[in-house]
Image 1 (cartoon, rainbow, N blue to C red):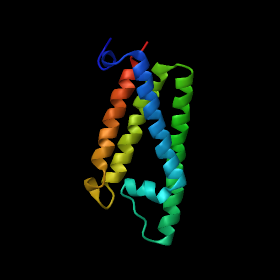
Image 2 (tube, one colour):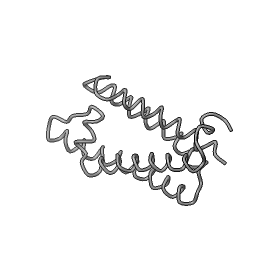
Image 3 (tube, rainbow, N blue to C red):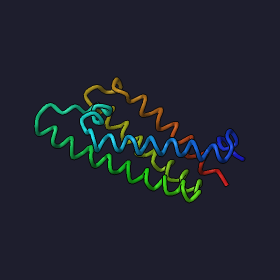
Length: 135
């Protein structure tokens, strides 16, 4: 087995993937239910009524994107398709990169959680690689 797959058993990789899937689903649900709270995590703080309306629509779009990916990952998990979970998870790293880029160009720059988003992207790529290498 290749690194990082040899670090954990196959069932453990599946459980780690399920945990990551649950986090993606939770973040997507937060963006749908409370758009302002979710946008503050990306450093986007609306200041006008129009800004709040635009922010709400944008965050719902981002939230449903996360929920759709998480539902696909849940389905892969239930079908025991670990390799497919890994492929989608590694592709989802691009979403983490885009989110970090948006947050970095926000009013607070790198001071508002961008490093956390970068860390999440690294963790997601590590987990995705472990899942993808499974048998």
